[in-house]
Length: 378
Image (cartoon, rainbow, N blue to C red; front, side, top):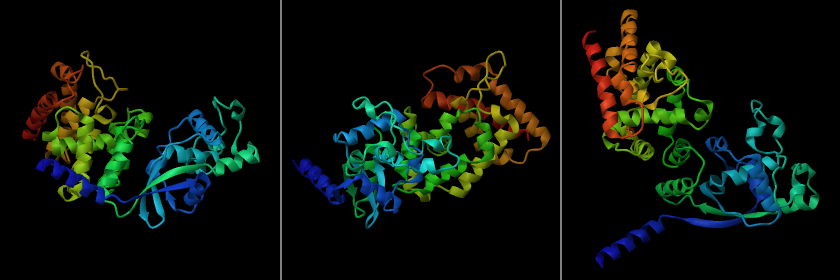
């Protein structure tokens, strides 16, 4: 009985830390708020605008047919200033149809001519297909402007961690965003410092060269930033890793963001830079390419097991490996290449069932021992 009372009391206490209100706003009001800076769509969110033309068109069709749409969620940054945390696709679609979406203002965007969405794939009212906002009748223009949507506002007085968890839960079920994109957006509600640090490290030239065989699609999904996170997570909290990589990386990012005093940014960035400089001058773009048993590189492929084993092992001995002379660089290149071509290492890094703590430790030990011996001979 006492436990039930404690549980109810805990729930009630948490409820008290959440301050919300609901508004019914027209899409035209939301457009005006966006243009005047009263509705903020963070640049990181803007780059996640992914709906296809067909999906966007059907949403506009939904508004014109006065069908119900789900609410959007915002957080109050200051009185009267809201930041969108859920509803990006819907708001962005309306902005696109009105010719106001920021992506289409960018002269580098590869489809500037599509500044005004041209409707396509509308399957209820097919006469809409081919029309832009400028083409629709005045009656429909007014109807669209006056279409209302429920806006759920999380007030600024609310606990910041609960705001974070609300966004996280809104954006992790059935979302098409990558894990790292979701992490980037949600962590900013706790603290942007660690997220900004990951972005900065991902722009390091040596790092970018070493992972250059990753596809542009993966880069667009922030996989490069996830690899930076993976480096620091495995380096500093590997004892917490069991099997679920995604969950582990999220927990580490949360921890480093909340406990920023536990993370020495200057020291860690220095280790990161030196590690990937060494990998670049020895293996270059083949740093994380797997190899075959016939001693040939699969240069177009990126192997995450190689990434972990080589980057973490180099990082461990980075002070001894820094500022090598040309002779030592050649010897280290030969050593790292011999590891890649070793049959035992190839078996350790190919096939399924190796994405958990035991096999990871074995891979790291295999590389670590050889680099340690190399350092002992310096």
